[in-house]
Length: 512
Ligand code: XMP
Image 1 (cartoon, helix red, strand yellow):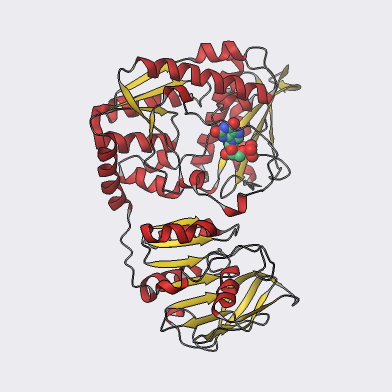
Image 2 (cartoon, protein in one colour):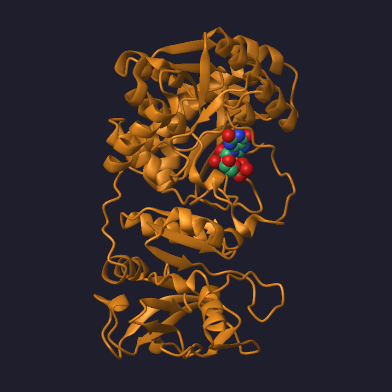
């Protein structure tokens, strides 16, 4: 396995993705903890990430010689390259014009890192992003590729298996970056790409058994991908020692609650408590129109209901959660970052402290894509695991203003038609998230010979990789046109449909 030392790059997680896509397990650890964990973690190779700092600054993030002296294969990227040169006796200078964006790399020498890529004297397109640059390399290293702005774009010490790059091979714009990672992992570090979801499944089943023994586990099921995959995996490990509690807020998509119940109870035979709490939630939400109050009301009620059900399960010692790797990885770039609360995201799940249940989190090493692959490995339908993200507060934050049962029904029906048309057009997997928003605005229309006066429905669809930034999706007009016609004809209460063309930022994905 590989140790990725994080110096605060925005794209450190992409390095981990590339390594894992190659079938090699890896973990990210902050630079100031890497030395302490290395003896226990026993990596077979080390990757140093990039970062926003300059090694010329006094308080820049550093590691000492220990990691360099382990004799392990190493790949150092951008800031990592500069640090490597600084520590091993090269030279780094600022004050040059930085290089940002696409650059052409000229391959200067045959190197195992570039196997299968452009030949000597030929070009590779890469992505650069640096201010400082290396001006002298340490003894034992040679230059294997250059670019106009970086005469030491790639340097190598073949004997010690240390490679250092000024560019970022992990980003999508470095066309053959994935191949460079595979070359490093397989050709240079001699690793095998045998970390698969099938292997992970087996290993995790054993770990869950070891952790839980004969204890009982409660799993809060939201109907989302993460908690579903966690539940199926845990059930495989410990069978009916697992009980799932599904709090149905009445704010899910059309038919989704029934699908969850059928899938888990009938298909997987997992003991499932279905708490049909729609009336309770809608009752508490009556008259509430402030978005943050909606979130808080739902979050609190959810915990109350879950808590009450969980308490009925005699002798439960463990709580299962679908926590993922991006939630637990300690990221250097997030330290001291902006902390303004835009929305108080509440995620379904989580219990009050006093319950003192021990956590079972079988997905905490996985990225979302890996969870999906594991779900398929466990027999869940690809369409089920590939579903768009859905917020904990559900349709409540897609009905600006006050929520009524009638409005929820209108929105469920309209949303179902929208998603059906997206699937029919083969566009579902190209979109990160698509949904309808029922606006508290009435407009005049005409149907047959009669005047109508009904609500406006907004359609939203965005592309994104992580939900942090997003672009509106460029629909073919006929798909939108057909969707609008169907919704207005089939759903009473909507007589006008509009499409939201706001990106994030400045908009957010949800309307509330
Ligand atoms: P925004 O609207 O902040 O959404 O651009 C980014 C992503 O987060 C989801 N979202 C939520 N998820 N509880 C959740 O579990 C929430 O309160 C919440 N608000 C937004 C949103 O659907 C999108 O995927």
